[in-house]
Length: 326
Image (tube, rainbow, N blue to C red; front, top):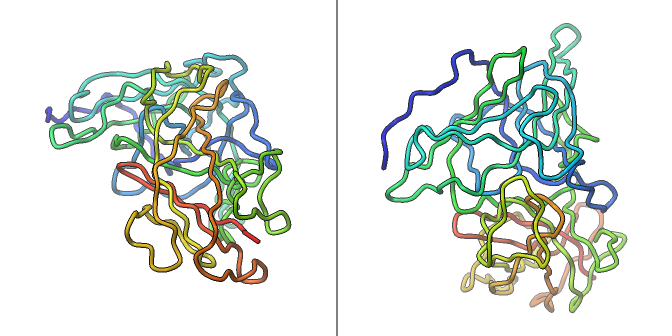
């Protein structure tokens, strides 16, 4: 399984949180690859964060970094002197170094109370497709380091797995950040669209028989070909497969899709194709046809924010998105 690896980072600062999020989405419109950015804040978990080959991730680090955004593809390895490197800490990639493509770097001035404040940098990168997921013969441990010409490194420990699914949500954008001790009120609505591009909402619900489009990151490497890290997904689209089921309970949370545990309100899981969205970096599109509900539905409204949760599952992870059906 490989030997433990001595971290190459000498000057270390606290990394605040690894956030496994995706494309910047505003008003139901997916922005260009160069405009991708995410936000969240908290403290780095004690356990390594899960990552997948090709995944887009955002790290919040306590560094004063110059802001910038990638303007061309393939993505650059440095933005205004800021770079990110992935090191193999333990496992088959022990001692290996991967220079990560950067999508954006931004700096937020964060206040805690009236006195304490600091700069918090948001760095969005793509994880290499070449990393090796953890297995019985591979620890799959890595360290992500963020640094600039004038700053020490901030590090985050991660573990690789085949997939680390995240369905895009409108709150994934740094346009509406939530900082410090302020609670997040309610879940951010998922980015699920009708075929005309408008977002599925309470006011514009979907219907049984309609095909809706879901957007996600972290589905892992394609099964139908290859794409280079930092480059746009090719056309025609590469593909992989995921499992999907439908839970027709109000405000149901995410769960791993099941082909047998229907509970009366669930339509059993089936395997569907996920497409690597051409022209984008690390973005997947999943087309889902809404089935007939097996139980009567509670209409959306008031405390009922959704009456259908669509669950997407891979071999190592799952996520779910609640929407409204009429």
